[in-house]
Image 1: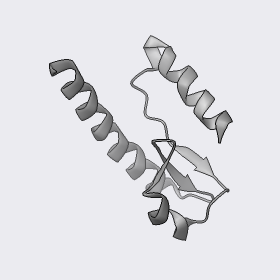
Image 2: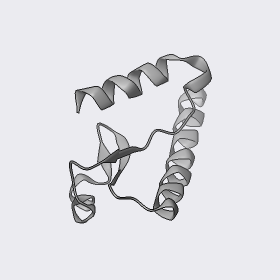
Image 3: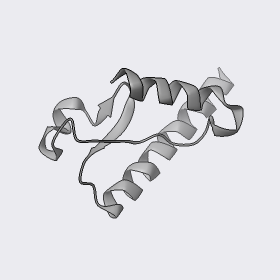
Length: 77
């Protein structure tokens, strides 16, 4: 888990990558466990391996909208 968080922290530290959505793909949980984790690991969305392309694209799209909304509200406040 710490390695994933470290990678996310490093990505967020680079200005050019700050807005890139982060989605973890993991074999540490099974797809039926996603709801029990609220679909998040360390505050970032994740998919259980093996993940299909449609689920990955949907997760990225969902996360992009959430990230954009968070950034917009933090800039306004």
